[in-house]
Length: 314
Image 1 (cartoon, rainbow, N blue to C red):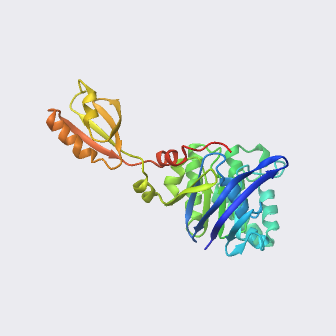
Image 2: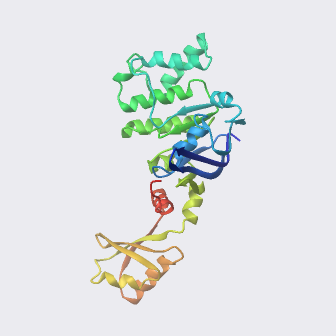
Image 3: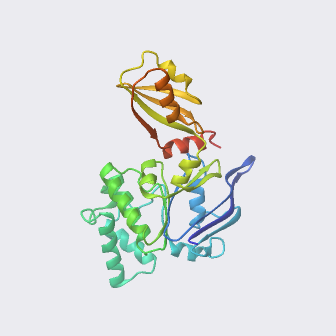
């Protein structure tokens, strides 16, 4: 097991105020070779969980192990086993890119030819070739994220924990970093958080969603779509605009009707409704000419909203 979290709880306390329960008895495991998306609204407990897993914060209760090492009793071994890119990427802005990576590698015990080769490999992997002789302070936010990712990988750790790794990247950079994460995910375990749902859908087969300190979903993306207690969405296209669209309210379990233009309507109904068959029957009964019918797959964004809609900042 690369990452094992069991009954993890984290309380933040201050004198004269009630304890804030940032993480509330959560449990999950990440297997070797998995790329797992860790999602949740602001204040849900994502960053706190990641900081505990990196031995940056102590847990209040529960157990966290990384690569078999307990964060309480073997924190140095935990740090050696993982690469970490925090949400707010801390960098020495007065250092040159290559200089910084040499320092980062040396802190992990790399020396001589091995260190030089790792620095060269990381610069190539994350696309810093043209920027390697610049000061970090001269780089754009996107390139600073690349430097942070390179330092997380410099010692070739088996586990990567990335907190918002694509922050500040333009569409081209997003595609490049996505490919980097996909490449390293073939050999390493990757747990990363993001607010960009397209990143999760592009990279992950499995998603963990946390809300108000508790896990509200954990499973393969396809399974979440199937088991989400949301709704069925179908786009129906008719030969011409309906003279009276309220006729669609006769469909069983219908929740919402949206006119999309060009004689197309998006129909939202209860999950258990046999909506497509009902539309065919309604069209036949009302003498409507149906020319197109397509059921839309539940989006991760919709599932996320559904599972976290009761969230409020603690």
